[in-house]
Length: 227
Image: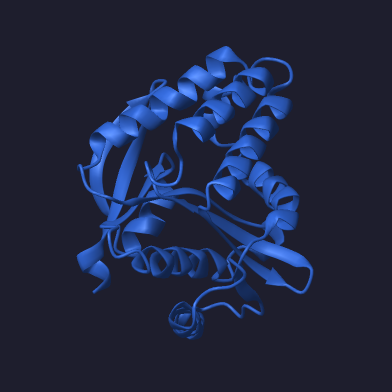
């Protein structure tokens, strides 16, 4: 996956022209050498995420290590199973990243168990159990159709409010449209401002989920919305 398809690039260029910010960057699929930088950017973005703080026990020592390990293991699993990791870069600088997965596709039992063992060794039993429970509840709330999941999305702090988040969402939308089986994209969001961000871009409420005494919205962008 060295780059986006021509059709995707055209759609992203259109989105860039519609964006209010002045973004000077190249949209591309990330390669293995980019994963370390992508993990660092995701760590910065999700460090204060209230749900992840509960899952990885921010009130205990070594929260940083547990969160870093979880992000690293997820990215490695995404990469090894051929899931889409999309980035926007300006030269050698990664401005933003989005991880788009296809639950149940190219993520078979072998890779799942490898991920689970790695998570147990790095993030611990309780955190691993809570991550799996969260994923189970999200999948139960989704219809029984092929779909994609926007697992992570992040923009470097110094490049926020410049339309990069919008471009990443558009890139994810274009990427899922390349899969004729996929019926849309889901994303689980707990913050009200992020919920408004996605709803403004066509995502609809699929389910209200409460996890660890924290309420969140499972949002879904259906395929027919993009047609």
